[in-house]
Length: 152
Image (cartoon, rainbow, N blue to C red; front, side, top):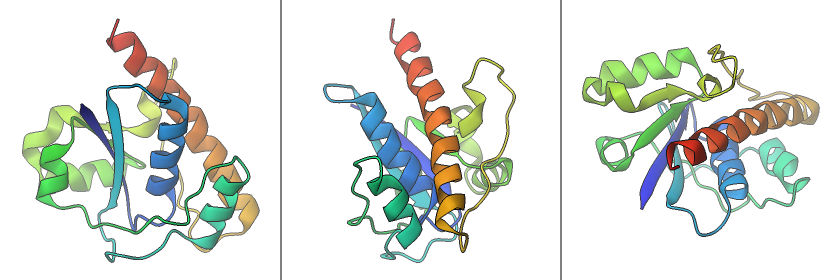
């Protein structure tokens, strides 16, 4: 089993949405297992209510999510670490330089291969969370296609 780890700041918005969207897109019977964490997460916080609602609209239940702090154990377990921003990627590499070949920006898997950040919706309206959800979902689609192509 391979493990993918999605990383953002607080692990209450972007990375839990990415984890849940990845699970939905990759489907059953895959070799990939997903998790998420935050660089500055307070362990045990629920996902933001707008993140929960935005995913609920797609039939995904995020209500049971509890935030996790990015620690060495999570880093060691991950085969692929996917950050939401270049700043997150930089911080991961500063703290864990040995994982340089396993850290990627979420938007680096598309056909354009033009890295770009996913903005933090924290404190924003439900519409902002929907926009963020859809942006993450498009990036996850590219990521899943990339992973499937790598396996063939």
